Amino acid sequence: MIEIRIAPELKAKCVKAALASVEAAVETGPAPPGLDEALRSCEEKIAKLPEPRAVLESSAILATRAGYKALGKDPARYRGSAEALLRRLIAGKGMPRINNVVDVINLVSVESRLPIGLYDLAHVESPIEFRAGRVGETYKGIGKYDLNLEELPLFADVQGPHGSPTSDSERTMVTQATTRVLAIVVSFGGAALLDSAAKRMKELLETFCAAKNVEYKIVN
Image (cartoon, rainbow, N blue to C red; front, side):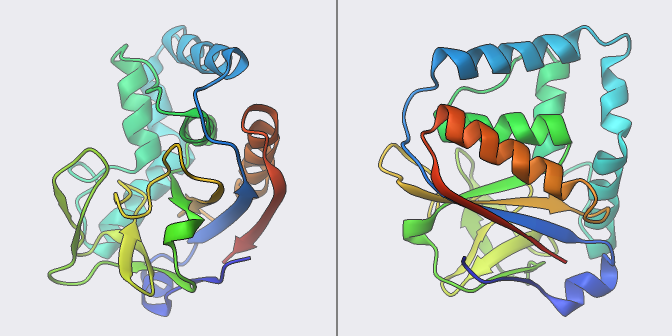
């Protein structure tokens, strides 16, 4: 598996930071009916909660906010992707439909309340470091303008920053041509939730993305 490490400087400020990396060979394409049904079920589950906004106070969401704050980034302006997805559901906008692989990762993110980065392994060079962004660092986020990476938790490979728990870059995004993926689940509250999230992802990738050779490991 690709080498992933947490920078000592980030770990010093976010002592409970931990990651789960999942690698797999996949067949990327439209979401099959079973996956679309799972996404709709997730949407309905949130909508039917007595107080839907209460999910924004879950321990995983609060830990992500605290991690951003510890690194110097305002969590009200730069949200973890799990919180952004949950806010979308609470607003009644539903889960985005991109492709089967991206949709699986979004589903696991909402279920676990943990942000997940997703990368095309053909465009990633080992090793990857999880660290805080430096002055002047930017990249073009997927469907976004250039993202100010200073003090934002991010993933950087040999070529530089390519993803973060807020928004990944266009350089390593998953497309219809993607055949091998790397997903990184981010927890600022310790490793307790990571194993179940990685196993759930493995199950869904195998079921809906014809995934083979699925491997995962915990990094803390």
